[in-house]
Image 1 (cartoon, rainbow, N blue to C red):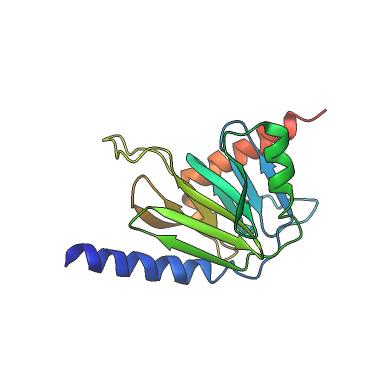
Image 2 (cartoon, helix red, strand yellow):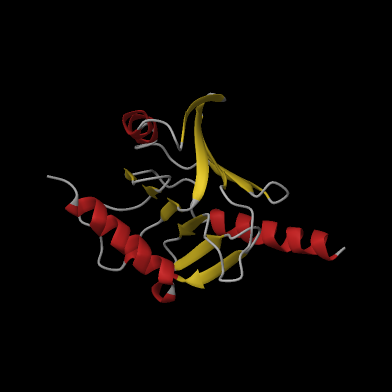
Length: 178
């Protein structure tokens, strides 16, 4: 009974949070080393100083697969050029829906006929807190943090350690370009 109540509460929180992001167009996608993917949903050529003014999806410590029209195209361990080409296909598309399956700890982000399925690489919840699987920042200034395991938290983005980490990853990415 407690498990079902947890799932219902977590699912309604997820749905309410993601409602703020559905319909927003992808402006940029950054592919980092490993499985890191930063999907910028709102923004311009000049990013605002406060990251939480953007809407961002960040696939952090998770496996992922990109499908087109229901067919798998690329996964998180494929060659970098293949991954880069595949994830760039969502630029200009709007986030049309997001579905979470708490039994499997999966989430699927839909951008029309292109979808990105995200699932944990590691199911263990370690005593030091473990790893975040993915996170989403809303324009309202909140961040939804998924992981470790089935843990879901909503924090103020300005106070979230993840906001600092995402800022670092963006700086790392931009300093890597010629």
